[in-house]
Image (tube, rainbow, N blue to C red):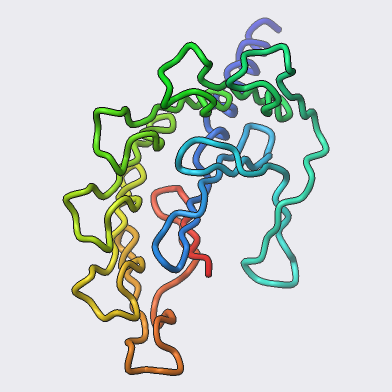
Amino acid sequence: MKRFAFVSFLVLMVANVVAQRINRVYLKSTGETEKLAVLTDDGATINMSLDGNIIDYGTEYFSERVANYSRLEKYNGRVDFFTQYDNAAFAGKLKYLGRTAITYYSSFDVEILRGKIKSIGSLQFTYYQPFEDELAKGKIKSIGSNQLSYYSTFDNVALKGKLKAVGITNINYYTSFDDKAFQGKVKAIGPNNFTYYASFDRQFAGGMKTGNNQLNVNGIGFYLVP
């Protein structure tokens, strides 16, 4: 009986670690990052910006009729918030979503971190500091074991500040030297390439020519949105 209980405990711990992860990265057609999504251990989705603030949260609904269509619906489990009596940096912010606790950097932390997500369940968040590149400072540096990097102030003007890599997956973009219809757009995510109609294709200029706008690369979903 004791052995069974111990094995059950280990299974639960492994399930929690595996489930709390970066689930998706949403990139706009311009190449800007719209949001990151983290999946919690009980199936809820938390969407956040690159500067570590929650945008929205809920349960993702997938359509059985429309391929690749989903929407975020109200989460029906436990939803708790920090109160006005908690630290000013995170008063009123989401505290629990189901079994998953969310913590934030407090008013006692350095200014650039205050109010940003510190952890979601077992996932720890770190951020680029003020002494690092101007375009990266204040943005998420790591989520769990996944490092996030950004194009710097020294890179091509069409790349500056954009998401460069998530974990081992690199993201490349068309530069300012490319056709004006697709300058700055996503060129490749990992081994997956994208091409676009050029400016002389007036009817379709800038529209995607080849490539899949929904990918799973190294266990993370990448979505290109209009």
